[in-house]
Image 1 (cartoon, rainbow, N blue to C red):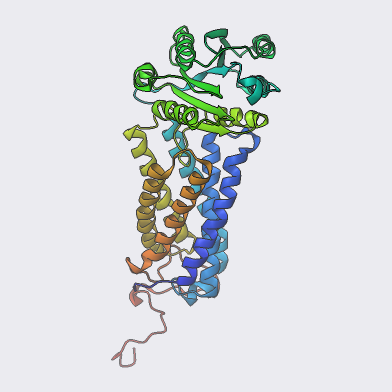
Image 2 (cartoon, rainbow, N blue to C red):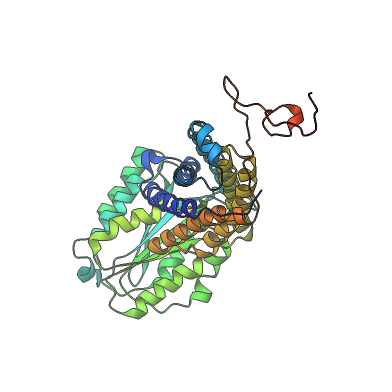
Length: 425
């Protein structure tokens, strides 16, 4: 039993974690086959297990400092067969922890109602001469799920509810909403945020369906006199996020106000310079509708919940522990399983803290936060053999012709060892 470090294993584990990060980001961005978040996160952690497991295995093949030459000579084939066990283990832990993380406790309501608040003031003739904002809103309605409800409010100096909340469970309703949006035109007049958000809240209050949450998508190219602390009080109190889009804003006070509205209500602000990009922004906001996964920022009413913060940190602790134990299983070594497992718990705790306090909803920043969390997760596990000693103890014993099986009296040493002083026996 010795405290030792395989620096090659540390390097290869980090490289494996880096490759897993790239593949994981592609997975999170594309969401192939419309996979549920539970399955998506399970696959994400299985990819991490594959990257780190392969890196560690290759490092020990090249330089078996931790597991010993006897493992390389006798058990290497078994290690390759055990690698899929770690993938399955991480997939299972990932899906279970994500399932728990997505449960709604304490009166949390899933966000299903979307109110689109669209600026149709006279300045939009310059900001959006092709009416791309209406095209983007129409396309979003076509892509929404059947269990969503949608409403449309337009505003300039006054605000108008052009489409009350309507369920999208039927094709007729969906076509009705898109037809209403298609008929909208830019008007004259100024910009009144207060009237717009007051009408949006009235629409939300008109929905008597219990157990449904709501959010607002608000687009404008202007500035308005607006008291955020007073006029957003009901939004904040009910946990309704207002996601704001600033289109071609030259006045910094306009973007500052829209950002303040989003931040105060727990939403996100998007700065768009070209109206033709609005379709992607609308879709991005919808994709994050009530988003709550272990690897992304919480964008619903649980954004500041200490309960869900604790669940995320505990989930990553369990994931790290499972990853460490899984590596021990790959090497078929109970001492490595213990060392890596404890190191995985520590690294999972650190990774959970990094994710909880580092994710902020900005794409590049969140990607870097996930990368840092993965690198910490892999590095601490690899270094923990210097904290907890390891030896060459097997989790299983090789059986079969030609295998050495120690006798009970030999305490694990080969039976060819002679007892001193036996005198002919």
